[in-house]
Image (tube, rainbow, N blue to C red; front, side, top):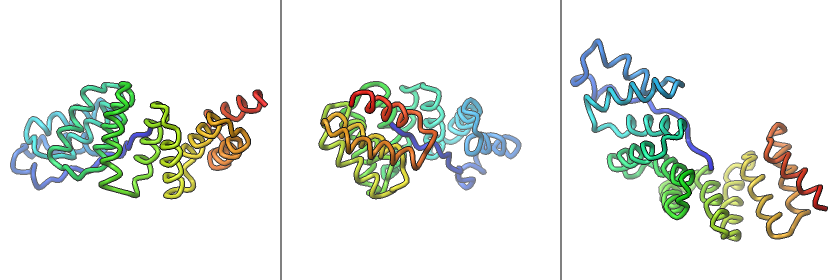
Length: 204
């Protein structure tokens, strides 16, 4: 499960006339640019208190809640972001990731599917939906989604590793090993691919 962690710049136009000049600048910077999630949450909350109409503010706060493991708060914020911008694929993808971490795989599937519908080239959403399918034991569908993610980004090591897991589960250990090695070629420090290949070797 992968989330989109990028923060979005929040438009000044909707805020300048509402937030006092001595207050909006710091909150805006905190909400849109800080890598400290507590700072992001504080800044975005301040902006929401002044103007609750901006979807990006909810998206940024939701992303920080998700990073901190505050899943219900993240889901609520991505929901608010989607309500304000129904065509936002990133909010659907990240809400899906929050549902995944709660074990609500069917809900995650729906959000990932919507993200893909809105942005058919969304590499992370294809991979994430594959992970949801895999957890639901729908291995053929998972394999299709991982393969699509790889087609869109052949350098995405996680999708190669995930596809290796499917081949391993299907008993095709030789093909699984190829996938794991490709993941490690792309990311030599990828611990999960290293462990998967080692585990596969011990079983042969």
